[in-house]
Length: 176
Length: 201
Image (cartoon, rainbow over all chains, first blue to last red; front, top):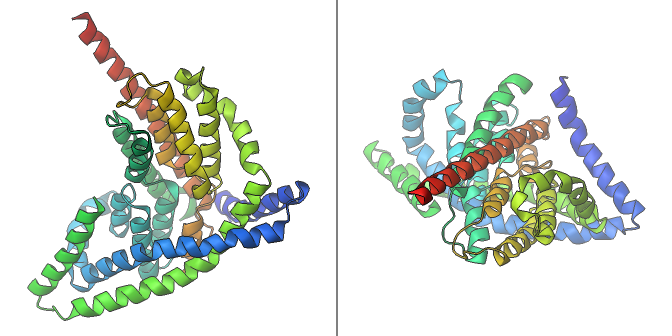
């Protein structure tokens, strides 16, 4: 195991243990609160469902019709030279626009290529590394009535682009 | 934006099927796409419920406040214009802490409070301040320790190691955050020098 996979393996158990320990020290009724919180899982999943249905149907129509293959064949020579798996391109493009939309595409990539393949690892990293720029800017600026958002969109998209590039490079260097 | 994307995907698919002479696949694809969504959301439900439960314990244990206090000294130099607005800074730190812990639902209210606090001292109510731009860039770069939905997805598709990409994602998020902050700083300086030149003329 490389350092990075050891780190990944320890991060979650340590996080879970420290949260529960902190709760115990602060005399939080950990089980009761856990049950209370996990009820929200249902709401979150229900909120995601329409996005998953709409996007997975769209992806399925695109790939069954042959349009996806044609697009992949067209882009492979260009992106392949950079070592970028074409299959992950839709995630990179959708990520700044829609969290749930990109999540659905990630699901599709993981199902087709396997979560532990290089493509699957890159897709997972991309999905987990950045937040939905357009959504956040709309919500936060909208809430206080700002109309001139200045350079925030450009800077946010530069951050997204960096996240996608870093995901690819780091997967290459650290886990494949 | 998503409206256009979705429309193009569906219509493009139908058009491609028609041109390729296999229009019959469209109806099947609609059914099987929907089925996939249902199977997937059942798997997601299991893992997400766990993280939501843990998130609740973290919140009750006051972990957010602790992390926000640790982060506060890091936040201050990023927001020089908020020196006289400690309330905004505090909410920014809480929002960042909640995002780091993967508590998206808890992060939003803090973020909105931070925006309101900054808007109060904003001389031009229609235009974003420097601090607002920096805050939202930090927010959209979205660094997180626990990408719970990705872990859930990987587990749902039978990964040997659902958390394999957690550390890599965190590093990629860090890179994005740094790049976003540098971009924000550069745009701000460019903007200022342009405005000063304009003023002298």
